[in-house]
Amino acid sequence: MSQKINKFINKKNKTKLVCLTAYSKNIAEEIDQFADLILVGDSLGSVLYNFTTTRKVTLNMMIEHAKSVRLGVSKSLLVVDMPYNTYRTKSEALKNCKKVMKETKCDAVKLEGGIKIKKIIETLTKNKIPVMGHLGLLPQSVRGKFKSKGKSDREIKQIMRDAKIIEKAGVFSIVLECVASDLSKKITKEAKIPTIGIGSSVHCDGQVLVTDDLIGLTNSKIKFVKKYVNTKSLIKKGVQKFKSEVLKKKYPTKKYSY
Ligand code: KIV
Image (tube, rainbow, N blue to C red; front, side, top):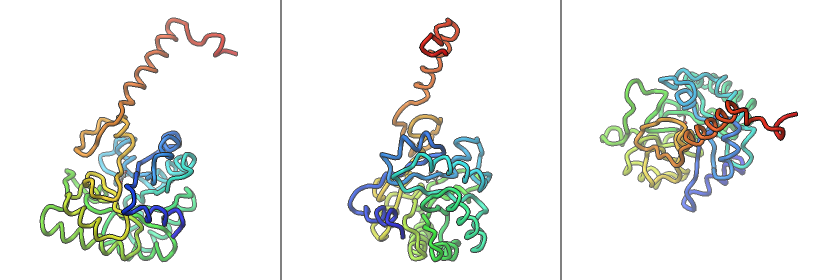
């Protein structure tokens, strides 16, 4: 495990971990100083491309966005989501994760799933590819409506078992998406690695949100999304002013001309 990843793990039980998504250099540069971990999430499919499912996101899309994000990240751990159908077998996962690590110079990859991908996680970690896990609501597997997880006895047992299995297989952290509060508390208490919640209560070791949601660039109505700033209105103000100055021939003045 790299020093950077050990530092991340060692923050468990000392301080909460701050994790954010980025899809481009400009956003990455602004959030790097505040984040412990920056994730190039395959949520970029819906946020930037209007896809109704993350299943349409390709490996090349992830690589190109991650290369841009890499330019803006100097201190945070950089993690890249492996998109749907890129880690179905051990050899496919190894080939694609090696490509992502090499081309994007990221620190780790993130894979969705529990027992089904145990062998894949083991293969990757044995080959020195750090893996972040993702349990609870798994966007790459959902067909139809997104629902919270971990309320029925069956789901509680399954997610608890998956958390133990992927920790043993070598993940350095687990994202818990839309997991019921009591269950995320229990997983967090029993795991030696940090849990990162998204809609999974304050009990997790850290939190992650899609940056575009929290800065108000999207119209997300998801329960766990809190809009901390209204970036849309700032953009509107700036662009309106530009338009008005262009129409009134106030821009460009001599200062802005050659
Ligand atoms: O794709 C993504 O952005 C994610 C996070 C929201 C956890 O997986």
